[in-house]
Structure formats: structure tokens, C-alpha cells
Length: 180
Image (tube, rainbow, N blue to C red; front, side, top):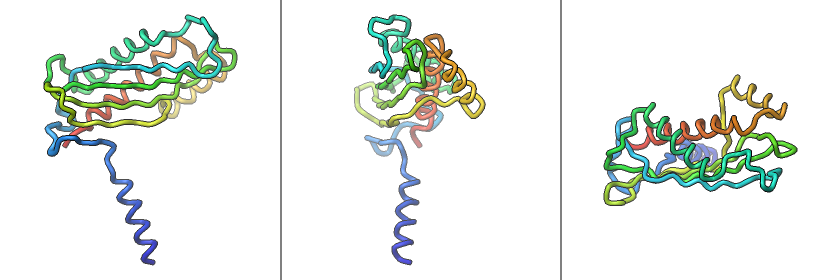
């Protein structure tokens, strides 16, 4: 009985742990209130299995970076947490593995991981968070639609900005929840 209680207690504590690491306590950041500017966005593009050497029909790492910057800014504005003149900046690092469907001309959902650091005007690290390997989600019916397009080999380069937007929204949601 005692062992069962200890296991349940440990699981409860694990479930309550925060994905956020605060490097300054108490944190000056306030959930859904603090506004941030974008300090930098780094995208590390990995071409998965099936990439066709020399194929330029998909966005380059530079273009993908710009898409992420634009999508992140839009998602932060929508959440009301973006400002161009803030004392707080976000530094975003995204690992983006483009996964190809058989034949290399269409896509599967990408594999993504990201880490975000919030710094102040003096470059002091205030908080950070990360998400390990995940893929894009479009809700129940949206996933079914995307999965059908992937199965039909029609999810392609023109659809990749939709994946970028989903990732940017995930990061903006996490950023909005950051703080007390």
C-alpha cells in the first residue's frame, strides 16, 4: 500500500510539472499579459528520406525561416503578446525535418522540435521552454483531411506554409502561457 501511494504521489508530481524554466525568480513575466518582440528565429532544416537532390520545388532553409518569422509574428499578434518595442525578446530555435512521401514530390507531416528563450533588454535569460519531437495537428477533421491528401500524394510545397503556421501557433500559445 505504501509503495502504491508513493508511485501515485510521484506520478501526480510529474503531471504537475511545468514545461517552463524560470531563470529569474520571481519572474517578471505575466501570463497572457507580457508582450514580446522577436529577437531571432533560427530554423535548422533537415531533408528527410526521399528528398530529391537538386529539387528546388520546396522552400529553402532561408525561405522557411522567413515563413516562420512571419507566421510567429502573426500568431503572437493574434494572441495580443507581440510588440515591436519591448523590453523582452524571444529567441526561437526550430528543428524542422521535412519528410517526403514516396517519390519525393509530395510531403508527409514534418517532424519538429523547438526551444524558446526569453531575454530582457540587457540580454539576461529570464525563461525558456522547449518541445521535443512532434508533428503538426489540425484537429480531428482537419487531420483526416490532411491525412487523405498525404495518402493521395497531393500534400505538397504549397501546403508547407500551413504546417509552419501550426508550429508558430503552438509556440505563441506556449509563450502566452509563460509567467505568473
